[in-house]
Image: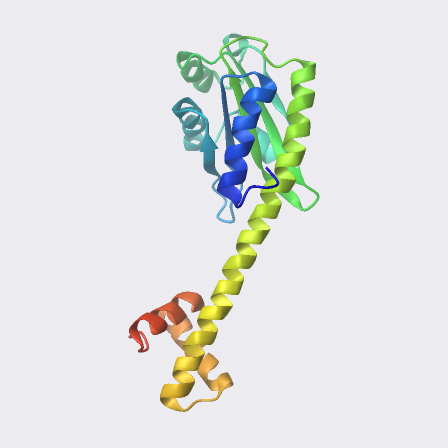
Length: 211
């Protein structure tokens, strides 16, 4: 996981390894986002996507609780689960009988949830839960690191684009760097467009976007 190139590659490695380490049929990852609604970047089977969709649509279920409370949610037997009866019935219809949702978090905050699913009842005992927690700790750090690296790359790329766009303005309109940046920023504000996108438009078209 720590050697993966990006967030998507990291979570893909996580769910594939989880199947081997926990001897379960399905695994998936849901991640916190800046917008608030979780994203699901990796599942080992469409069954997991369905399980997540049921919960995220109704904003309730073990995944939602795990993500909200940052606490492990274990369901040994969905037949006897009473907290989420409608969701439990749908998941049972998919052939899943036991669930283990483990939070992914670091000292900087919550990252997401690792979800594990088995056809068998009582598939996740004390030993399996301990392994899941160890895996989750490594995964949370790996995902958080990959996100920071991706954000840094985006920021560096944005600075390069803005610099190129400023150069075009400085050459074409005989502006100094401060004035060129002010022009870009004004167009960004007037059009409610990100500065990076304004810069990209200018580079592509060699002219300022219309307001």
